[in-house]
Image 1 (cartoon, one colour):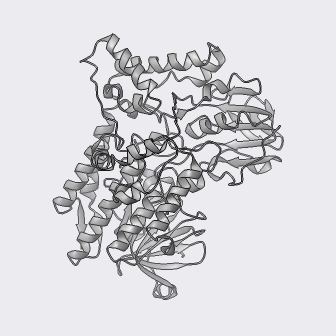
Image 2 (cartoon, rainbow, N blue to C red; image 1 turned 90 degrees about the horizontal axis):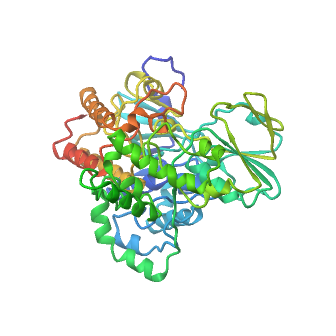
Image 3 (tube, helix red, strand yellow; image 1 turned 30 degrees about the vertical axis):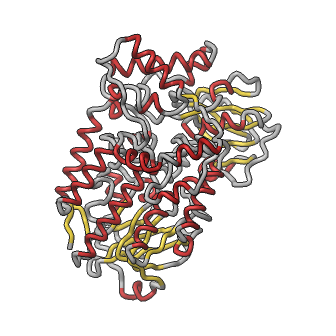
Length: 550
């Protein structure tokens, strides 16, 4: 559609006439949130269609097929909680299942709720323009669809826009893949020289999984991560029966905890002796989960001296496993930020991989990757590492990237990519001023990915959206949009909460620091899942004072 930047965007009558499909709501994405959003809106009687660029359901769990991909939330909490039989009729095989099993679970949900008939796969939404005169959105896809809809709801995911910012990827004469689009059939790595770029959560899972398969592996590491060892037992029938019997308890508890998991802060720093603190840290560490991060001492997020003690505890644990090798310690153990202020990956034998004879670790913090060459990876000092296979685990444009890569235009032709390119603002992460009936999950300023069990958070956000639409329709109104003042108040609250933590002073994807030129703001709401839910519920109960509804 022709458009001069900054001028109003109008949807022409001709364009509307071309619309072969009309819906009450269009849902972007068929992952955890998109499936549940589709189900809820259909239950209200709305005519809804979901679109996904993937070949089937799963969202993140369809795209991330790389070796070693698995949960780091425990399986009994990474579930839908609105239907007990849906919960109990599925049995997880492990505490932390892998990607193929997770994908099968989402297919089970899809078939159980009969969702597939209202989902278009292999179809990417490329544009969505709001027509002020008609109060509706015109949505375009890469398959040529023109869709007329009242509500446009994004369930695209917090980490769904991969970064591909290394030069020369198209020149490599071997096999090069991004972790976010790893081939489902896998790669033949036997006897080959494999380079892995990135040691974040994804890179860690890949490295520990393929180290025994490759001929030789070279890991290119820039930002070191605190890691925790995963304990991942296989579930027996008795284990499955035990967690299923707790459904009512789990469903009542998760929405109100700080992280959306079962973890609660059980201890206070001031109320314990130094000896007791070490015992608590050790007990949490030995749990083999994220408990040390999310249920030891909450003060570590606010008080540097406490953060230093906890961080040193984790550094010592990692150093022991690295057997005092100074190169490994300097490259893999963080010293410039505190434990928990970045995403904490769980791993299984990851650090031990670096003791293998067929593994080399290259520190690219001070000697960064310059480009990909036909024969391999060239560093800034001119060193070239010759490789047969390159796997890039280089991260995502978190929170905003999924939507800024779509041509989304609201009132008066305003462009979402342009606005978020200058300042990342939302109202509770559920909507954006200037974009009526655009409702969102897993975007900035809501809990998502950071300090949040995603199923808990996404269920709450989709339920709020569904209730807001229901309330609107029952009152005979057709549009909902945040006010500028309401949005400003939420941004101020969000920044005040984030600014009180040590997270705000770090450099990571939590603040968009991994994307050149991206405005700096803590992307996820850090006030806690339960607190966020309470504030969202209060907004609805008070008649949506931060919104204008017409």
